[in-house]
Image (cartoon, rainbow, N blue to C red; front, side, top):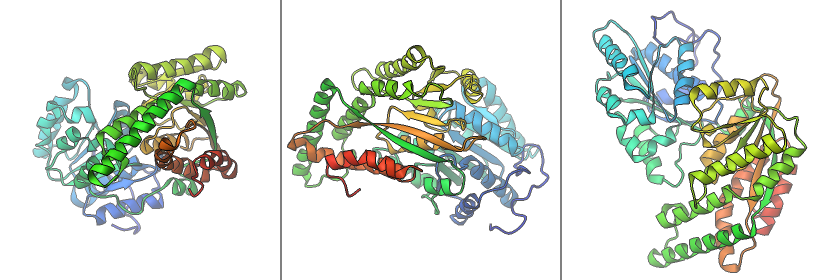
Length: 473
């Protein structure tokens, strides 16, 4: 592999075999990623910023393998059904005829076994299968994976999800060529899962392709970043303080018992307390007031995405929907803004309609929970209002990338990020708070630094840094 002339040129090939689209010009970093993967003997994880063309890179690798060794099967595993559809569309551009293996067994199982049989009897040259994580672990697909030939490539999309024990155990061991794609392969709160993912797919390949690289090379657009600082209510502050003290006590107990605080997130008790606290922040009441104030003066804004929190420790799912409904009510009823909600329960068909209405401006905004974090491609988004700045770095990074994808007529994106100010804490809690806040603040500062209005954004964060003596970040 190298960048010698002709490597990426289109070749005439049989139906369903990989072929490079005539219009496709791989970017330099994509070619580098392909070279690194081959140099690593057909294993590895590509850590590339959301929106930098991981799908295209993966399909270009399949094309190269077909050309060099006669690759016979491409198996792509995605976390969600909408990503299966997106991969399907991209595969067709590469002359592939994918089997979309999810939901109804009858629609794909016989298709797959027939095509694998045809492959063995040489009446077919190439098979493409795109499936979901939940179908991967099903008996229907597992029973067929053992018939995959040695010349099979597995691509794990948004691969961090595949580090979960049940999924990781279901990955086919008889497939030697392995590629993981993720902007954030490291699993949140799960070092063991991250390691088993790298054990299967291979370590992160160099060079990593960061957000700054993506903006510099025009793969993502420039942006303006406005932190919106939000105070907790009195009741929320009391609960927050209680949780922070419990985290502190768990840490002290751990330090006394084994003399090592280690990573805050390794311990199950501390982990569940941190998650509870993150949810309390996610659904903070005053975010709704801040949203109303912000959008009152922006009623003519179009192509806006509103990210809501996905849960609260008291009532889980119901509470997350409460924020979603409240946001939709404030925008739609009180401010007369044309919006629609977009959740995991929105059908694929409806999602496609909403995407089109959003792109052509019939809808000014989409109010969404997590399902927009991974892989949903709506490049027309110009403005994002993030009500739930997730403590999870993966979600934070995914959301950024979603908003910064280029689109015709989109010069630059604007992001309003609601950051909850911790309440005034007593001495027992303040040290714990500093440690917890440090990680979070690092992300905000890094994001502020890359914005076109970096100076202004950093000034907003300065109050928070001063309050907790974190000026060194």
